[in-house]
Length: 446
Image 1: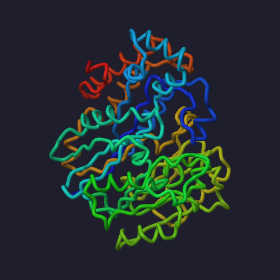
Image 2: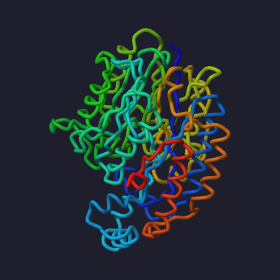
Image 3: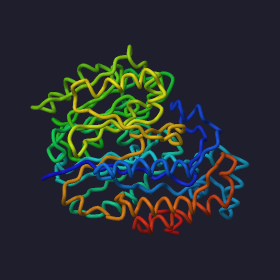
Image 4: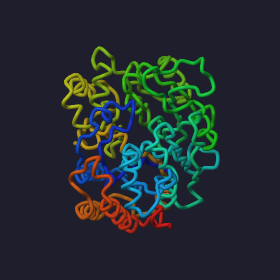
């Protein structure tokens, strides 16, 4: 059956701010305490969604989390009215308040791991929300993420939803940021490629020294089992620990794949030649393109700074592929020089498309961070909540919604403002009606 890949981008939430919460993410750490512009961030994301929809791709919207997360603050001992909880947290634990106000759910590459029906034993699309246990500010997301995904993909005949893995470091799961699928056609069985940072149960194995390895081999194995994947069509690879220490906190900061193309830096993985040999063996017949970018042309630090590999490889309806990169790639000479060569290397990648995502990039997330990929056949597409698909009407509606509810400047000090909580909840309550999600947020559920 004919199938296609849809992208579901995270809508930037009203509390988008730069609190420097993500240790190991160079951009996040470098922009700590800078003022943010939530309105501009949301609109930049919407522009990318609309542009890809206008290319003829299937583009959806994923709703943000409820923030500030007063419910988590109450679990941590803060009490009283909502405004009293915020005031007490701001006084006693300002970094905790910043963490529960994070808008990082915009990066939906971390929302879940998704396996299409062509790969799974029961012939359904499987979703497992990521536990994101390595970072407190993200570890609380998965219950609401699960409810949002179930509201979007609500048909049990076509979709299977799993709870997140146990929230312990041994099963640290960062979702699709460390997962790629290769295939000839989207509707055929593919090769699912899981990337991890460390082995949780074997301390003898090599691991990074400076920054944490967030994703474990054991988590990847568990997700593959939950999704009913054919072991012969699954490949596991460990990130190069030196790259994690250089700021490559997720695989999608140093590699991206689509169909029969793997675009990566030459230092991305341990035993890289063996990794690609395993992928090609599992892929089987047909041409498989490995595009390895040499350090001599693009130093690792330039790749991290520009987010060259945090790009989207998209299959164009007209044929061939395009690579979607952030504006920062144009501003990095080594990267831009390489991107001028890329369409002429004899691979399916024929176009380079540049987007301004400065607000997201300043907090450590580029084009690939902002989207969750879901392969769907025609019947499955028809079973998706139709209100979440990007089109002219939804684009206009969401831009008006952003203008109505979002601030154009936010600092860490503003997070204690009780008005911000009211603004955020008012916006999200309206958004759930726009996207027909029902009561997915804690404040709606009592």
